Amino acid sequence: MARRREFLLNTLARPALLGTAASLGAGAALAQETPLRIVVGYAAGGSSDRVARIVADRLQHELGMPVIVENKVGAGGRVSAQYVKNAPANPPLLLLANPAVMVVSPLVVSDLGYQPEQDFVPVSEVNNYVFGVAVGAAVPVRELQHLLAWMRANPRSANIGVPATGSLPHFFALMLGQKAGVAAEAVGYRGSAPLLTDLIGGQIPVAVDTLDALQPQFEAGKLRLLAVSSEQRLPDLPQVPTLRQSGVDLAASGWNTLFAPRSMPAAQVDRYAAAVHKAMQDKEVIKQFKANHLDPVVSTPAQTRESIAAYRRQWEPVIRNSGYRP
Image 1: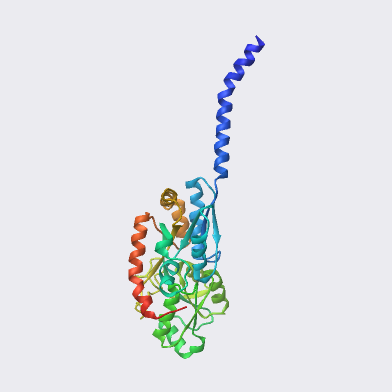
Image 2: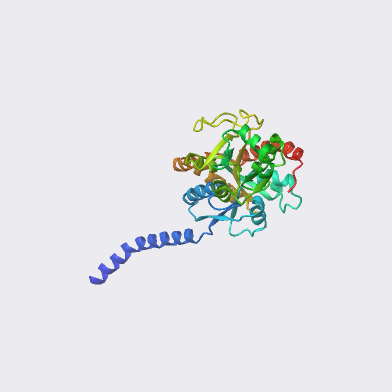
């Protein structure tokens, strides 16, 4: 009788034990999956870095695997593209890149080390943004035309900080110098964070950067925001005019987009694209983007390719006609 009771207990327990073992096995397999890394070409704390970390946090849930942000800083973001292009297939990498890396640099840098359309596959655009022109508290101007007059009166001090050499803010800086009639020097930084530190500290008098980087410091009273690059005044900054309203005929925006190396299998690219597409519709993700003064975008790979191609057609003649060379 005792043996029969033991047999029945073992028989009843076996499916549960098997189920537990299978569950543990699946969990272990998930935990062992190689983490996905999102590579950013700018310093931690800047605009691109914040975007990557918001997206990475949600992607972990969508993919069921660790997602890590890795900063590879240098050469205005080009180091990150070279790194992702030349990295082995495993562990998997995605590149978060902007127009400086994928549009501007290919037109002006001879030894680029990568070709955007040949070496990378667009996965998804994740946000777009506009730019702002700001001055530190020590600069005695409150309007953009006043800034141009100050630059004419102080040509040796007409240094304009930008978050990266060869970025769109770099070209805005050159255009401001042309408008003022002085040879303004664009001083490239390794991202927004060190640029803002120097602007607030008085080491650089003027900066052109993404609005999401400038706006919190403007609202805190640490700098003055003179103009924005949007087509119209922004609802949350009605007191700040556009560049065109300030006498500079320029309106422009930028973007952050995830790219996969061309070597990544198509099925894997599709998996990541679907996960990003879903992540960018999450209410908490949208809330975090808005809290950081960023405009989230939901996009498919096809839509992203089309958007980048249109952007390249718009800016290629501007960049070539500028004559700029690093």
